[in-house]
Image 1 (cartoon, one colour):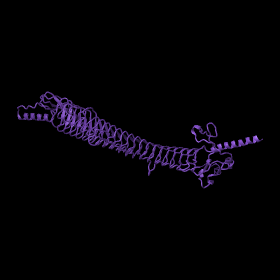
Image 2 (cartoon, rainbow, N blue to C red):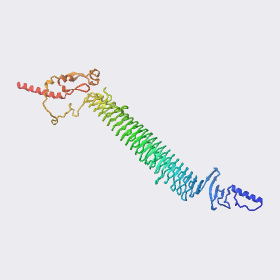
Image 3 (cartoon, rainbow, N blue to C red):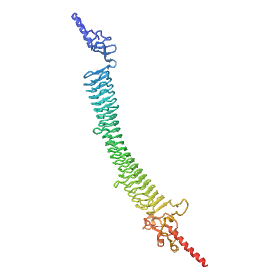
Length: 590
């Protein structure tokens, strides 16, 4: 190790040779020494053995510039510089910049600092911009004076005019030219490649690829990719192809899951969460779909809420509907419907204002579908078979289970209108009120029947009412044995005296009898017509009194005859009056 003044004086051959060898040794060892060479030249190398630093003399030959420091312990080289390192192309001004690549950072001026550009034309237009990191051919090649941008990939962030943007991936934020604001992030091949407004966050291959609108966030391959040049704004898409075709005008949509909301074009304010949820929505608005395949084929629906796997699956135009539960409202396209529970309202296709709460409540029919309106079913499989019936209320497990085309029924109780008392389940029945466990109308097509029973009450026929507290009696609040009737002269006309009296009463046969058991009932009637009451009873026989007073006998829709004793009361009044007259006549004769 040695230094030399690089001047060879005239001397004998041996001395000159020794001096030449010293020069060569100084050159080969980079003038290594513990002290500065006594004679210096511009661009002269000097290895300072005092701190193991390789230095080079500046062009003015008035100072050394540190190049590298040798770490002999770890056998590594530490690069130290103060200024700009340029490994290719023209040497720029500025400080603390690093450039590698043809024309990389070639335009940096004195104000440009702490920039790193690696790749042909990377950061080639930067003049006074600071702290930009640009890696890849053409990366940030149009950035001029903005700072703190990061671009990694071919043509990434090529035309940025704002600061603090991050682009990672070939062509990521390639056309980004937002005139104000900061903070866009794109990661992935062609991510947000045409974005022009900020901020946008796009992560994934072609995520937000053709979006030019502001305040969008996309995560996943092709998420929010868009078509052409879309100005959609304030959208969030997370998942492969989520929001993949957003077009101009689409605003404030949120999609989470592979292909979620991937057909939304101009719709607004839609929330789709789950794989393939809302995958067919295009112009629909204000929809909330949560669960895989929820609202899967919905297209133009508005204000639809579907929560659960396959909930509202085929509801193409369902409007103002709420479906909660797996496959709830699966085929519903009508409006103002609410279905809550697994497969609730499943086959309701085009109804309006139906409500179903419970497992398979208001389920419907796979062949004829449900089109009836204003039906309300609450309970496990309540209103299960409804098709064209309207205005039905079914409350209770399997209440009105078999009702299909019947309308205006109110049924409350476990299996009411379906199974109980040996009756026939209501199918086409209408205008009935059935209350109680197993309360049943007298026939599947019954009309205008009221049945209130503690258990398994069975209607007595159309246009009848029946209250059955098991085998007990029915009491009025005033403890009266009779019902009050309206009898105001002002509502009556054609008023005349009735003459039926004693002669008819005398023909009435009052009988003692017992009720037959169901298996003993005449075959012309149904076993369900039997009266569950034991012991000797007192009363009349309808067939017998019919010959005397036909107006008090009614044959019900079941075929069974009943007696209405109201008129008999007034005939008894006439009979008493007749007897009173005879008594008075006898008294006068005596």
